[in-house]
Length: 330
Ligand SMILES: [Zn+2]
Ligand SMILES: [Zn+2]
Image (cartoon, rainbow, N blue to C red; front, side, top):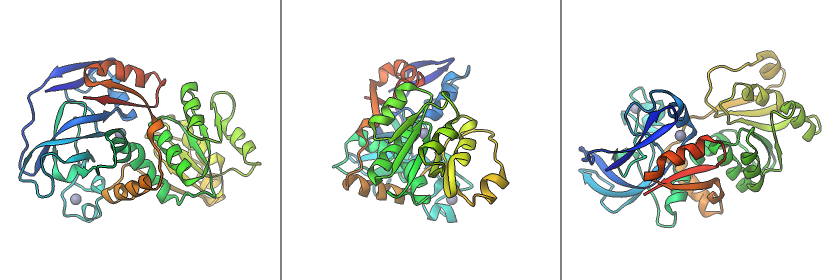
């Protein structure tokens, strides 16, 4: 089979690999769509790349082989959730495998085939096409949905979305469905335009001035009800804490090392709530499918599609910031 490897220093090579054989309890899935995630960019730019392994952790496809699986058969359409766990602990019993002490990842979606434990194979209903399946059953909507649910976001809220990479854009898709008013910020003009097309009420360039001042201005000085940090930039969490109103809510989804927090000013005086989300679980996925059937629209998140053989161009496009979600296809 063919698989894409991050070859280091922003190069991608498509190489030949042996076809995977399903181990007991596994299915082999033939990729239909594998989406590129912002979290892959660090390895993409690094000298070592993906160290010879195949990245990709947002993938949907058809089961082509199984070995002793209980509920998954050849021909099933599935979307892969990537977290695996022991299956017995408190967190696994809730489906929150990412919190299991024995947590593992299923990585390797940017390939023609992948072997997946049965627990990773979420059935993709016939009324959900491959592209929507990858968005609804992957990080893009899964993680964002979970954050918005934890923060009880509704149509009453004005929400700042700080960073409009795929996760910020996923937030905008769910906020549009909810009818909440969104203020979106991003340094990329392309992504600001996309955010506007996706229904953001206002879009701001955080480098054009003080984003906190601009957001306070737009909200009559009060601040937003909810601020979502969807960026890897160090400053955006501080901005989120500064621009949220008293008793407001802050969501942390942008992975980063350090950020500046003033506990007295931000948390104690303002009495805000904060929630971080890393991933989602199979029950979130069921709720997301429900929202989809009630009208959640995600198609405009995707701006580019490339066949697996053109993975190098796909990554370059995504890394340029001149894209929304970029998909690899068969
Ligand atoms: Zn991801
Ligand atoms: Zn466990």
